[in-house]
Image 1 (spheres, helix red, strand yellow):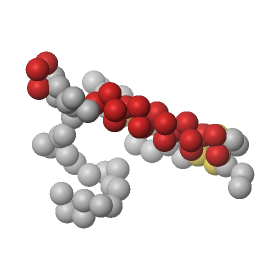
Image 2 (cartoon, helix red, strand yellow):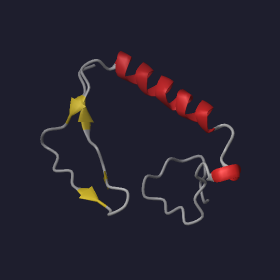
Image 3 (cartoon, one colour):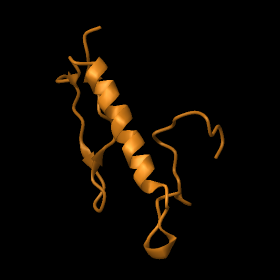
Image 4 (cartoon, rainbow, N blue to C red):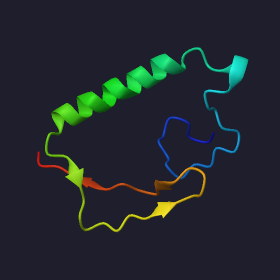
Length: 77
């Protein structure tokens, strides 16, 4: 990918790097999920006042994998 160290939510990953399926399933997937859960819990513990931005009009996209294009949040420092 161009600029692989930069997070880009709009990057099109046509050759996705998912966890795989069947005998080709990633052996590290459980660790990756645990690390993601730990990171999210740490973030939410530190930002106790985190909430959705009520002024944002987010909308859902996709048929098979529905998700918002963005999720704006607010928090008090």
